[in-house]
Length: 439
Image 1 (spheres, helix red, strand yellow):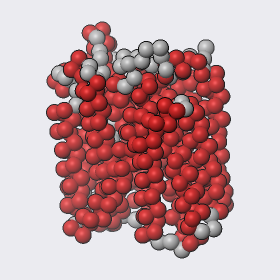
Image 2 (image 1 turned 30 degrees about the horizontal axis):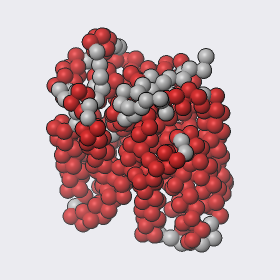
Image 3 (image 1 turned 180 degrees about the vertical axis):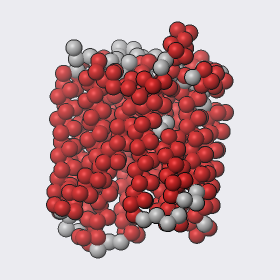
Image 4 (image 1 turned 90 degrees about the vertical axis):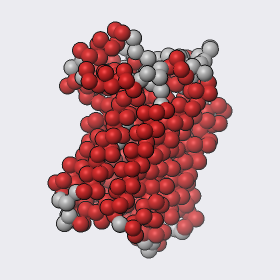
């Protein structure tokens, strides 16, 4: 771990003292959003072509499913670990290292000539893509409580925009060759690493005692640190469960929606592609443009609950859609809800987490979300196959309702404490998030 500590020192020469001014903070956060945008553009560039690349090495549908699942499993295992490491050694070295791992993984994917090789490359790629918790921790480091929801929304918008741009580029580049597309994605990741190395300042403040403890820390305890924190602060566990429930619901919808529209309207890949673009654009507009304004008018807790209610309403009404207009309205309601829930979940979790554990807990939450992306399609697909679309979407809506009840009961008990964190008497950078302990 000493080597990582040395890397932290080398990459962290720009410290918080150099970004104390508001312009510097804003520049750093915009750079973080750009980093995430490039990251997920590369991801979106690869995903549509991966099944065809897998067929090249002689695999079938089961193998393609394994390639997608192993990526999510790696994220589940390593997102919490990278979050903890970013708390201990700084955000910048962890983010840079993870992006460089992505470069290696994408290059290996382009060169893969067998299924085992391709599986290894995708697992390594999942490790590299486990930096979202660290990226969110950068935002938590730099923002006052009043501004945090807005910038968490910008991170979510960058992810959504990457999923819009990436597949579009994929369609343009596919005729030029699949292997070239993977190399281009690796090149994008390399450019991303250079941008972070050159321009991103270190945002994690650590004193000498923290540095000493980091060097002595047992690396095998990293994965379990977030769970120990959750045992001390039950509100953290409840917020993470909310993240899991709505992720299960939304990914279940994504995996079965094409089957639903084929059954109801006879749609093919082109029509569904247009509709998913519509969903992505709606989420980007919500997270990138509206969240900051809505938080100023209401508050984070209200938006979170409203978003969950809208998600449940959209899921309930989607399978009974009788025409295109009905379907687009239901999807719009669902997308607006998801666009509110995702950044509010991260924001409230950061408020409930001690300042020195932001990367750890946000990383754990993202890791659990990855687990939801593994099992959501499995649960939804099984229900759709054996019970039909209404049962599948009703169970998804029920999960979201449970999440809404869970967060309402949790936040009701801690409303005053959360309000003191979100709207302190004098806000500014350095306002310390609270940890809510129910004991």
